[in-house]
Image (cartoon, rainbow, N blue to C red):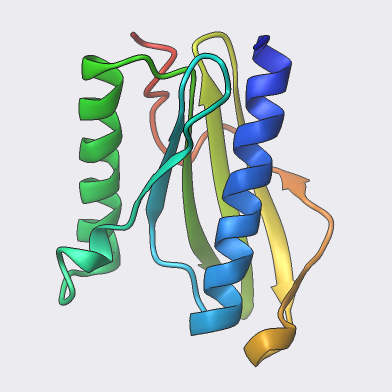
Length: 137
């Protein structure tokens, strides 16, 4: 799959996964996603499962460590880091997507409650949330 296709597919899977968690829990704790170079075999990593008492920073670090290990040990074509981001009274779903050739960081403002959370139009953020991770390899 070409770079644009990988970015698009990883973004779609990350956005839908983040929205599902938002509707279920009211927030999105950091998690990671990988796709192989064909854009298949999406794999997610939710560090909260192994670290139920961890802080947001610890969960983000665990997510990044997991993604770095995946990048170093297999056929990874795209990655995503997904989490709730807050600034003052505003909250949004932050999604950083990377392939070996490019990266993108979007923030989707959200509103609602319970199962009716919805995402607004994405805003391109300056720079990246972390990294880059995959482009370095």
